Image (cartoon, rainbow, N blue to C red; front, top):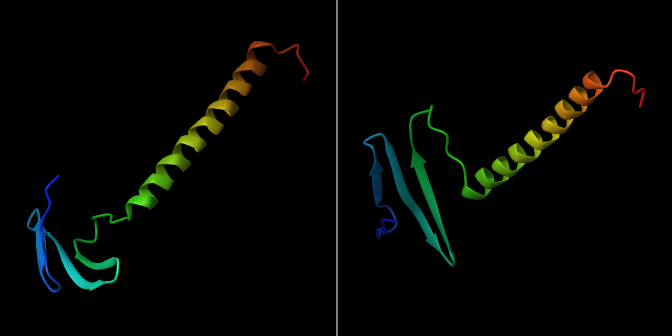
Length: 80
């Protein structure tokens, strides 16, 4: 991990297209401004973790539905 020090109003560049600026430094909090192309998705880390968990749960639910359908097809005489 690269660790940099920046003061309020200073910024850093990522890949010549993304600028991350320290907008404000407060008590226990730093406000960042991000200037990036519109096709760059920017999410807080906790949101990416929620999305990943949601995707895993959705995949499991879908797998259960597929499994149930396959079981019904393999045993057509079972009416339950």
